[in-house]
Image 1 (cartoon, one colour):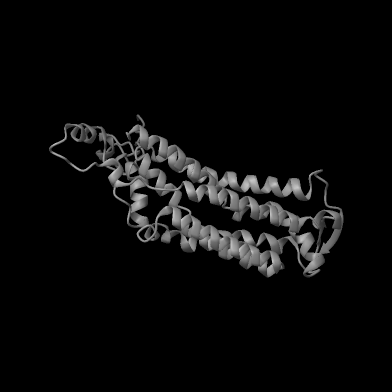
Image 2 (image 1 turned 135 degrees about the vertical axis):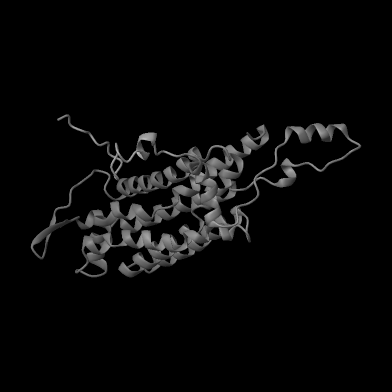
Length: 292
């Protein structure tokens, strides 16, 4: 249990965590695939298909997985707020370059692969901040953090939908692709794709900036007052304060901290009958003897 002032700060950090995790838009591109493919067929190459755009989803998983282990080592050098702001600044520069030079490869490399490398390196930083304020609510914290990632995907998909195709029109342009026929949108719809990308970038910056500014970890000096033998009030304050967990040094230590409670629980039930080889076979099944 943390003290009241810590709880208030923890609520603000939770809001920051949610806002920052909402910026993970890597998996939202799947819902925009047909709009982007229709646009690229007109302005990049007529050979572009929906499959070319959907291939970015495995690229999202790969790029994020490569840098997730670096989340906690970064905290040994920079504060969570600095890490969040730095990642936001780098992704903003990359997005601006991609918007100016937009084609298929800028989409894959500048909008997908590199931003997800950066996002993977900082994705657990908000979770780390919340763990410092609410060390006894690991399940709730992980649910808030990773639930916000899924909510961000939904949020950016809805934004794209209401900008590009608010009337929910169906694709009507038929294109033969091997033995199948694919449908693409008309020009008046896919011409809104650049506007959609600008809106996504603006929302990304707003959410990322609010989230990064609210990220922090409790200071030891805030919660462990300096002892003063001449002051009775300081002794009373010390009784009301509880020390904060030391910062986690590595990714393995983080997951040990997050799921450590599970190690103390055994979900496997056994009975003494399992040791009786005359009644139970090697697979643990009871041997039923038929009466002759």
